[in-house]
Image 1: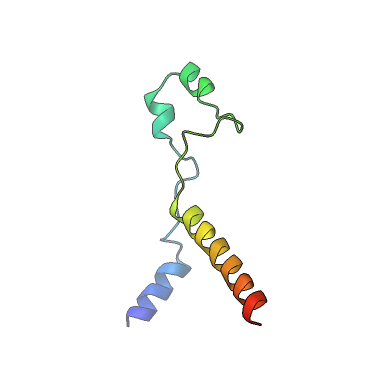
Image 2: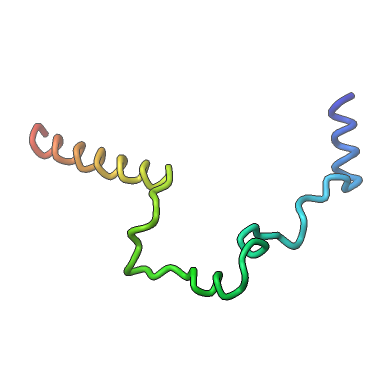
Length: 75
């Protein structure tokens, strides 16, 4: 019964998805001149934080290098 109800709702397009226009808290909070000054310089990146995916990629690269070194040493 639940599957039939869900199927009916999907066919009826009750779940229409998210809004077509997104809103930004930064654009709502600051004036346009602050947003224009906030463009990040790729050469000056020292203020950024590494997210979880970046940390995972760093650990994965270290693990792959370790595996390669162990295979080279011990065969």
